[in-house]
Length: 383
Image 1 (spheres, rainbow, N blue to C red):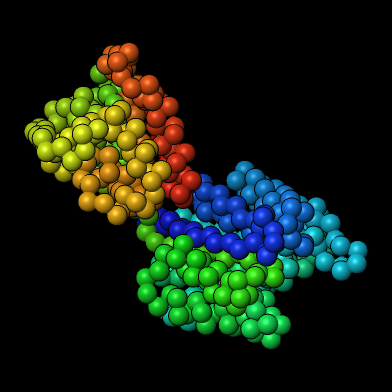
Image 2: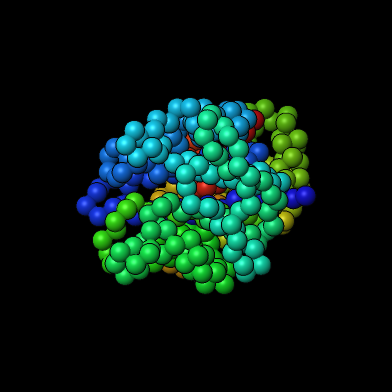
């Protein structure tokens, strides 16, 4: 089975008059799985935010370290204090774990049932009740199909409009009907959660009575991209590294003139350059047969960082410079492997270069951080 990637969308709404949302969401990714931890702190504001954040941080840290799910849940269940007056936990817990093979595990504690949209129908994720750490926990396990969408919401969404526009609140079934309507098209998880929260705010008449959170997850076959930048420190391994690069699945990008010449020489395919400048600040792109994109190195990679920080604005322009093209390709990929050579380019030591140009390792580290922040799985291997 092909490796699957989980796209995750999150949207939140704070209670009217509160600066901080009392719900918290932490998304953790490893090569083996994507894990989403959601918590709704009791009450609202700073106190609720602290309680929810404590819960999600503990759970996500344990999951990332590979601690079994049952032990994670047991730790949280024993850790969470109970309100003496209301006899309920100070924060809820919901975990969605999806492996690269598409096996989903859902854990629910004091939260609304999880939604599963499959073949145009919305149902509750089937769970079994277990006693863990003295608390009743619901656990469900099932295999995902590529078109499936898992959605989780906090109580604030379910109760939207209660006592006002909707006497009994939006309710689970009301949210399910809205999900069916939203997902008739090929919606991205971020679009699904945004529309749900917009509806939620509407039912609250613009004055939310509770913190509200929506999380949507959709899986698809992982889209791979490999970026080869910089020649290896030892020229003797040029052929081996290049062959490994060519054998990678998905799209292939070469960044750097020397690197492009190595690939051209090893493949016997000529390197040509497009001399049309779309951006005076970015060097021109090149072409090698069977390589999806060829760009200059450090200048272009710095410009890519700038483009990524502009977000969706890169799709609003007709720019076709190397930095914009590479930024778009990186955003369209799910799993990005960066093969970086350690050889030092003497030109980068030129004092006339702009101050913001950093050494290659710093640029790639920043690039990895920016891409991971938008849900990409990124690895860097040095040669």
